[in-house]
Amino acid sequence: MIFEKQNMQGNLLAKSKKTLPQLSIKFSEDYPSQARTLPPESVNDDENSTGKFTKLHESGWEISGEIREDYYRWINDFQARHETFGSVWGNFEETVYFDFLEGYQHFLKHHPYKEWDYGDI
Image (tube, rainbow, N blue to C red; front, side):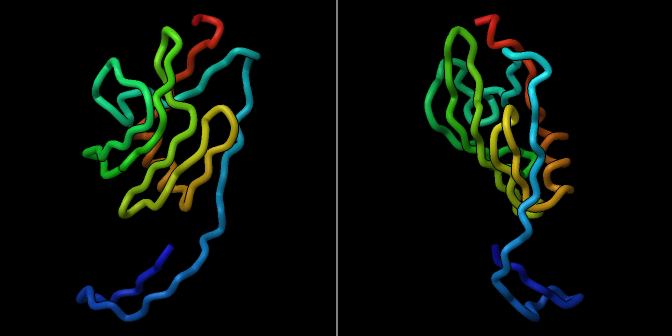
């Protein structure tokens, strides 16, 4: 990731390529068949589509992921990028990684995961 430092007038003072510390949240199951996934409309508005898609949202988040289907439609693994808040990626059933805690919180506020039961399909 490239970080830029600007003065009060917005002029570029310095530009450096740094690696951010990787932040993450590890999720665990409340019961064995628990699902915690993004809804398919996170990446595509067509209610019949499956496969890999990317969608830019009014929130500023561009979300990519693969829509899976077995009676129900969902997204497990995803990647999301925001110009201001950085990146969020992973799987809400395992581990989600993010550049900044504020970015993770902003992502969840605008794009919450859904909890359901794999046993229902």
